[in-house]
Image (tube, rainbow, N blue to C red; front, side):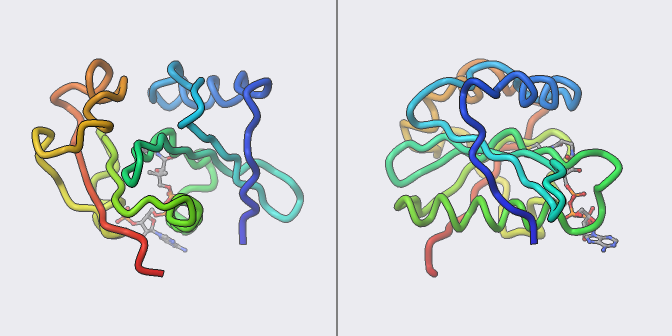
Length: 147
Ligand SMILES: CC(C)(COP(=O)(O)OP(=O)(O)OC[C@H]1O[C@@H](n2cnc3c(N)ncnc32)[C@H](O)[C@@H]1OP(=O)(O)O)[C@@H](O)C(=O)NCCC(=O)NCCS
């Protein structure tokens, strides 16, 4: 099982590099409602990163990356499951995300394409929603929090 470790803002440099290399949003990381995590194997080796932005009972999942050579082994799924467990414990009941290349991956994990216009106000105020994610990105939603 991967260990989920909070990345503190002073360590965002390595996170930014990983996000840029994967063409994901590498800015807009600061803010009390945003949390980012590293996922480490038993040797402390960073296998991936992921995070979320909380807007009341809704959250935007973002910045999910598995180091390229460790993909297709179930780490991505495990990371999403750990993120869901963490965010559900904070009172979130519904998750949203944007993805350009991983729609199939997220569908397997319970997300379904959603209408941007139906998104709650907080999610619609996010930088990804207002500015960063264009028509190439699929907007997706999942209900969580039933234990
Ligand atoms: C999307 C991403 C996080 C998935 O990570 P991953 O570790 O490869 O995810 P998993 O291994 O859990 O699942 C990926 C696939 O491998 C399959 N798989 C899982 N374990 C496997 C195993 N042991 N053997 C073979 N295949 C396996 C899964 O069924 C899944 O199949 P799919 O491609 O048909 O959905 C990763 O590809 C990535 O970092 N992409 C670049 C950044 C990105 O696009 N992030 C999403 C932004 S929102």
